[in-house]
Length: 193
Ligand code: GDP
Image (cartoon, rainbow, N blue to C red; front, top):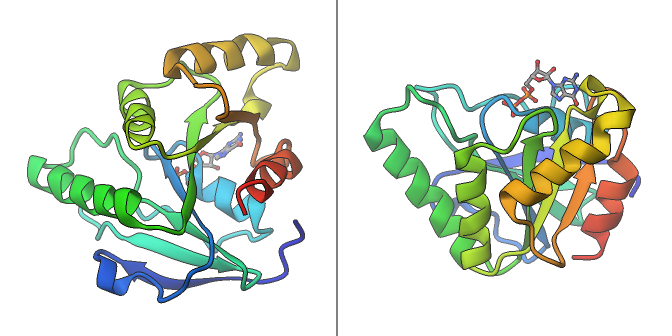
């Protein structure tokens, strides 16, 4: 898909604030610092539209990006910050859970993991949560440029097996640095539109 227009339309914390629209939505999830903002920016050809907004203490919001007036990326605050208080974690969990389990136009969750490392406990928990609610997942293994090409398959296998990816969920090798996997990721998204 050729992205010609992308804008952040709203930061929401509750359903009344979600955009009043029926366009397809894709939520983006991943642990903090995994490369989620870089993924979004690469996919929409922007240097800096999506920013890391997941620092502890900052307001944790669902950020809705309207793309080509035809679909939304919904940036979910990153998980896995050790320093976040229990209270904050619970509020985060409720906000995400409400969105993921009630939003009808949510087509799939794009789960970003780091190709270099085995998925974390939090990654596994997030994936299991999605499968529990029958939400399709697209797994993006990013930072591929940091691994020699000859080791990609081995690392993909670790991601696939650690998350226990089910048939039908796609795993895409990606690099925000080189743009590798961008076309494939868009092709996978198109199937859900
Ligand atoms: P977020 O917290 O998940 O939104 O993570 P960011 O997108 O801010 O990325 C965290 C760090 O990883 C930044 O320093 C990025 O430049 C770097 N990064 C993200 N994606 C890639 C990638 O594909 N390759 C490389 N080499 N670095 C990346």
